[in-house]
Image 1: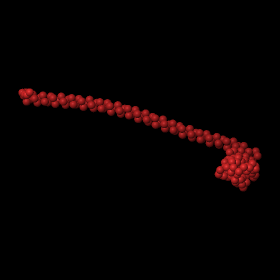
Image 2 (image 1 turned 90 degrees about the horizontal axis):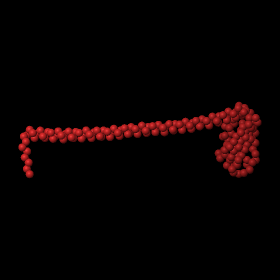
Image 3 (image 1 turned 30 degrees about the horizontal axis):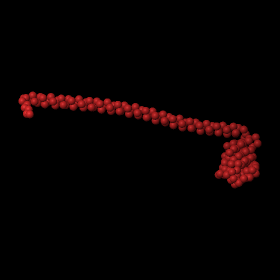
Image 4 (image 1 turned 90 degrees about the vertical axis):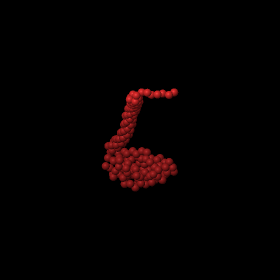
Length: 184
């Protein structure tokens, strides 16, 4: 089949221009709709990310506050423990003219490695210190006795023989009489 186009040249150009204009208009409309859809999607994504970021910041701040509260509670507990210890020292000190802390500081370096004190009771009325503790072997108890006897801070060291009755795992006790040097 053969088609002949017998329209004048001006009409042919006018039709070609209209077809081009329609193609351009449809393409522009499609591009505009595509830009609108992409813009809406990007805006929604950005809004979602902003909400997520705010939520994460709030969570991070809550966690940080919890950590700070925990640290403050630990610090408060330590302060309460120190206050309790200081009240005990103050009440012990108020019972007599002996400096409880000085007495304990004087005894502590003498305790050999492998031995430890379990109780120290200071009687201000009699000027005595009752020590109780545990040692792994007998020699540790003997060393502690010798150190205490050599110290002029104590005028007398009472040492029960039960302290050296066994070779190992010894629960020991001493009664120390404080000298005038121990007075405040």
